[in-house]
Image (cartoon, rainbow, N blue to C red; front, side, top):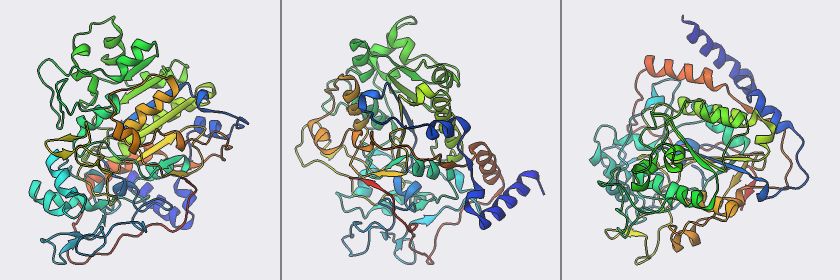
Length: 476
């Protein structure tokens, strides 16, 4: 028996005796920050630093469908399909039952930490949506990838992704946060960093896939607007940025040189610990964009445990300096859902809405993805229920800095919130929550992927997914 196997068995045995024994306390600095006395009054203006970290390719149901108190698998508002079944009974002519239910990706019994990526192309995402009927997930994805299509219905539980659950239950999770586009990474990250995909084609767009025209895109990015307004900003990235820094694709940035702000703040490849060092030493700019590495991105088939360890290091660094913790909001979200199923019908614009259609198809909003906001004002395990999308992040910075982003369409401003409703500036901080040790979980996940068999996809014997009982406080 290897040492890691022995530790896994001991950990499982301890969990049966007491759930708390399976977790460790938050990193010491986060524990101290949350235990500190709360200010009697605070406001939006007490936030001096906003940190955005966008991870990759996970849907809300895939990560949090079983979490108590959110719009998950027991959602009373879940729609009915045209055939009368619940939206969770996705039609599937290949399955003996004629449908495929969400199924558990058990990382303790299989290598399910490393599931294959499924299609998230513009065409396939729209086919799955099927004009809002939400009944074409399996036909669309089996046609795109016959072998791996069924993985779109897989989901994790808290035992599989303990850090993601603990973080969401310690701070504030958004259960109606949508990606911006029925499509892949680049279009969604364009909304996150610029507010548009240029649907009218005036600046090199529209961008509905991960491609860039010769000479780069030419519309104005939000980083440029911050620079012009004298607001500090920075992109934190290493040479392995997984192609996720959208500023690299813009003409003005491509033409910039070392020593110029657009290059130094937007394109420089730094050390993996640069963000941590700036956070610990109170050197963060007003707006930070953190770009993930490939292995730590959580993009299938990269593992969630590696992303958890990456995220934990950033939060621990912020909390290590009490001055920084008291003035920083950390916004964790995901760019799109991969092809992974989510049951909530995305909000889409009426036909003819300006700047919201490409080739006769609505751009979005896309499917729900996870959102967790970590800060002194979002601690306590709340659920933010307002509808958001990636443009909500820019609108939050608009509120803080007064720097407006005119690329955001009128329809999106009317449809999606600006994140401010997720903050409770007059609520006291709770006692320190419990979070698992991400380094140990990463070691366990690496062992599981290397040594356990591949997941078994469902046949005729299927069981509807269950959501954990219980409630959580909601912010309407």
